[in-house]
Every structure is written in structure tokens, then in C-alpha cells.
Image (tube, rainbow, N blue to C red):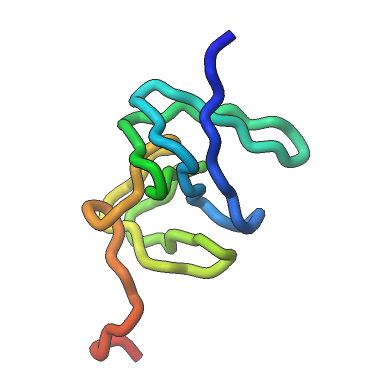
Length: 97
């Protein structure tokens, strides 16, 4: 049986989970809701970093804690590393109304 890595999904509306350990490319984890969803990581995910639990379209909110934490700057695939290279924070920006 293939090893399952540990992640934390904080809110059921989140589209990212936090890696509770380093996950290698090709490593997988499962989320349990109405059904069990198995996700394979596209890249290595470092401990404490975010991984997409569903596809996120460019310009769409990245949601953690049930709240938007930024916008995707590119399309992000399920299982992809979510970090500053593909998310723009909307916090603390004086140019936003």
C-alpha cells in the first residue's frame, strides 16, 4: 500500500491544505468529506506549505481558514504547490478599495 502523507484542511470551503510533513512529488494524501478524495502532489510540498486540493483558476481566490488569502496569478492544478510564485496577496495593499 502506498504511503499517505498528512495535511491539514482547516475549513471545508478551503481550496488549499497545509502539509504537516514534507511530501515528495508523486506523494499522495486523502481528504474525507462525503467521499474520500485522494490527491497526488505534482511537486514536492515542504512542511508547512500549501497544496491545492482542487484546481484554482487564474484570478480566483485562494481560500484558507474559510477566507480568501490571495488571488491565483496562474491556473493552479489540484496537487500543485501553492506559494508566492502563483499567489498574490491582497492583504495590506493600499491600492485596493
